[in-house]
Image 1: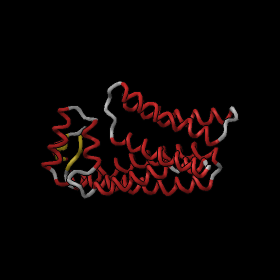
Image 2: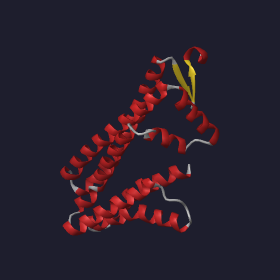
Image 3: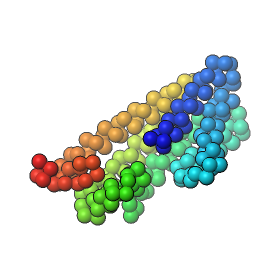
Image 4: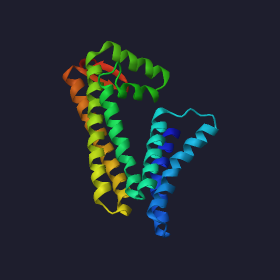
Length: 212
């Protein structure tokens, strides 16, 4: 729950700060920079508290540094807004690469949120059920494709819409992308496992006949 709250702060607080500053008459570029500073501040606070900073947050901070530098060089707020395009495209490529890795991204990501007993069950599913392995690779490919499509649509939003409309439109796109992914993965996963005579109860794989 604490990790989820942190994600909400990093996503919603910059949006609220941007529109609040714009309503107060602050320049677009500086309003965007103020919003972009929030994930930086939360990352620095975590470091000061001795917490471990994950690779995803380091990647976000790095992409932000590049786009901030680009916005100062070009003098355009759109250069700063392109950080979302960079992040989603890079995430899509990374997810696609992990499809052929020893363990796909979704396998490793799920393990980080499971307790020790469920982690053992998750690992056993991977070791003992080839359809489960194929499903996680297939779902990782689905997430990769969705991220790349999101990046393309995000680029259109950044370049075509007025700057003030972009942050809200990007958030709406993110919500739609995540909702479609969660629903699509749920439907695909159930159908795929059922076709192989399996079902997932929590993290436990069981034969369909046994589950009945």
